[in-house]
Image 1 (tube, rainbow, N blue to C red):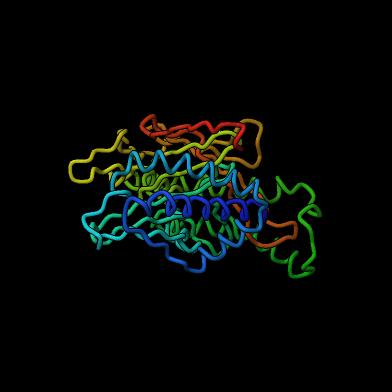
Image 2 (image 1 turned 120 degrees about the vertical axis):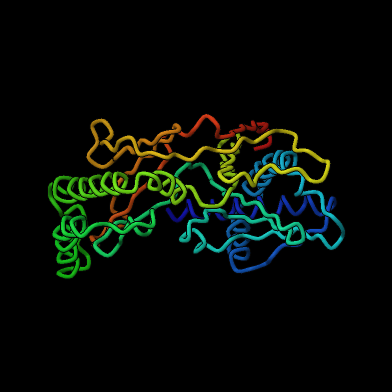
Length: 323
């Protein structure tokens, strides 16, 4: 996990720096050298020259494309129209903003964001515990008393094990799937279905916005020999023209779901639920213990299984001799 964070932060720095190098000759641009910037730069500098070059080439390929489809990146109204580049603090993600890089033109009242991913496609990781009201946190609607009563004995058992010995390992719990995972997933499933039934007009939409972000953004996924760019244009703020300069490709608006269709276990799995929504959305929730030692909370690894056909995706292949 630690190496995934280091790789991800290094890629954030590579993207920001390549944005700056490409745009400084075209427009007025400044970099906000905040704490997240210093951290990301430190991780980037910890790699050898060959690895740094791979990050830069991948970032550069993505940025060439983004400049083509976002004319406001390279075009300002005047010299005072400064483009500000910054790496966002991690806590922004807690409020539903998943963007890692933010590019702002205050004078145009315009901004876009980029989520940088290094070899992985997961969306937001979320926790469940006796103290977490996932309904309120994710959807804006509180979970029922019945849900908390159902999960209480399981989390109490975990708390007692932890309090008895802080070094107790998860592996010491026999039949962990039957005792912990399945009852928690069953309670979660039942509550999500209930919330959707009673608030059918907002739950599906709020769930997707909580997981993928409540602000429009581009996701840039660094692969081995390619970079993938996805456009989450939920509110129509991406791909805008600048005066008479039009983007070189059209990014459609992404349709949010309006209805939860079903919540079922993945075939032959005791850890993963598949949540199907209309408009082509399907999300998997895999429950797991976040550390080797027992604690009274569990974590979800959340992935988009399928997305609407209106999700704009572009693959850019990188010359294998260069990376």
